[in-house]
Amino acid sequence: MRQGIRDKLESLSGRLEELGRILSSVEATRDLDEFRRMTREHAELGPVVALYREWQKTKADAASAREMLADPEMKELAEEEMRTAEERLPEIELELQRRLLPKSTDDERNVFLEIRAGTGGDESALFAGELFRMYTRYAERQRWQVEVLSASEAELGGYKEVIARVNGAGAYSRLKFESGAHRVQRVPETEAQGRIHTSACTVAVMPEADPLEDVEINPADVRIDTFRASGAGGQHINKTDSAVRITHLPTGLVVECQDGRSQHQNKARAMSVLAARIRDAREREQHARIASTRKSLVGSGDRSERIRTYNFPQGRVTDHRINLTLYRIDAIMDGDLDEVIDALSAEYQAEQLAALAE
Image (tube, rainbow, N blue to C red; front, side):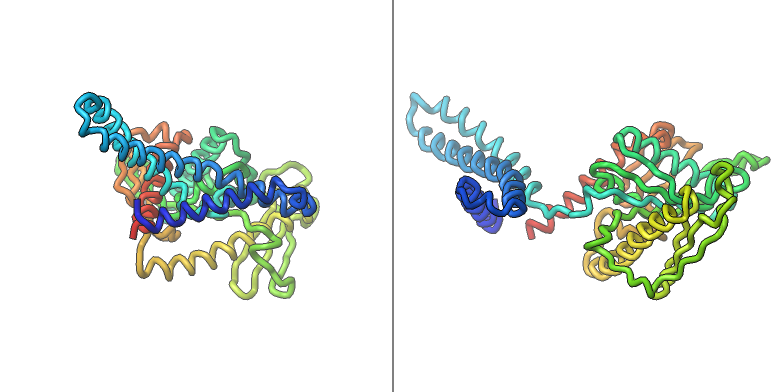
């Protein structure tokens, strides 16, 4: 294990002991907010330090067994103990490195999922609808809730655009690699000669912004327009100007919400989406600067970047960022995305570990 990692683990061990002393004192409960913060920190550090102590003990066991090799009577036992310890050490070291990786504060947040039809006309809109169903089915498997905020349906089915809020533990951590261009290859139902067409949709996944901490929107920077909603939604939907369009003047970002039952509800939803888009734009600008020196293995997440192809005639799905091809397109389109997402997460983690080792 590198000395820098050992030094950090020693520091964490000292911090855990310090927290233990503070939390056991009477003074600790005088400030309840600080007490809760230190309790959370103690709970987070405990498993890491326990694993580090296991590494120390295993390393000491290996050294002790090595010393016993000179004793003929103990040699066989010593060899077994040393082999066991030396096999276990790399496993513990890898797990320790994983636990030391920086955690994103966004990973546990809810997300805004936006899917837009791209090249391919009606076929692209149909595919946008299938992608939305895929993510909805995946959310159901995760016990997340999906709330449609805005939808523009196409004439032959599917969506020109659909925006939804996905609410659930770890939503962003699982969906954050889905941003980009998704391409479909198949024979459209309207194709009389059986030719394979290629269409595309773009997917954007943004963590829900904290309105108090992440993005501050100046009321003078937004223009709010109201209009009558169109489409499905019951008799109430066309009676009042309940739909809301918010334009952020400095950036030109425009958000519409019309699926809520009141103007107030649609305005609140639109402001949440706007805050997430502003935050996302800022972060993508920052990521672009970082990517100029080192591109992430799982791609930049740029909306125009082709990340995945769904080839229906061959029954395969290919993620181009990690050269992963799976011949189970029906299951994937039905929301069975874990194998794809796990592979992307593992590749991202491997890149982080490589950076940690530098």
